[in-house]
Length: 185
Image (tube, rainbow, N blue to C red; front, side, top):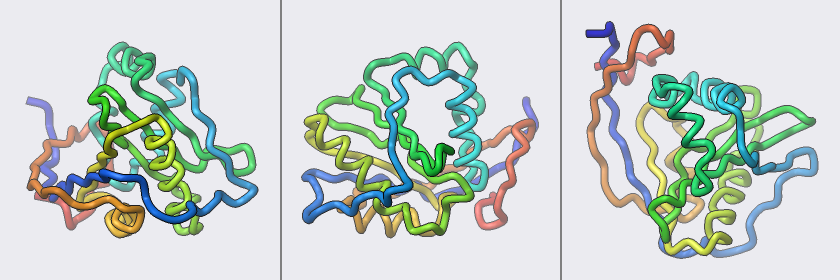
């Protein structure tokens, strides 16, 4: 058996059944979101690994390149990158394979963008993009390994928590992830 670190988290499942009310905040002029038509595995891994490094994002790190390439080439999965000054500042992934629901599979900011105040506007961009696709509902989940502002930001955007589940993960040591003390099992 592969050496691993046990991680215990509470996973919160959230859902939005109607578009958020009010005018969405616009992104500041130095930010833009670009849909990456067919991201390369290396570019996706850069986004995923950098955004998720502090939050125990590990599942896609264990996915073989061939499997990840198929996922990224699936027309029902889209990757959207936030740029600031020509440099990636975050990304989100929308998955329509459970249509007519859209799942916000991954959402986050690069470390240099955390705390910049862009999070809510970027999340609304993701949510509004999902609704423009014609979704019946939008889903997302977060857990106690994520940034402490994740849950309040999702709730502010209009998501409602539907359930919580305690999960224990065996995170492979070979990934070299920093595991915060509060989630060590």
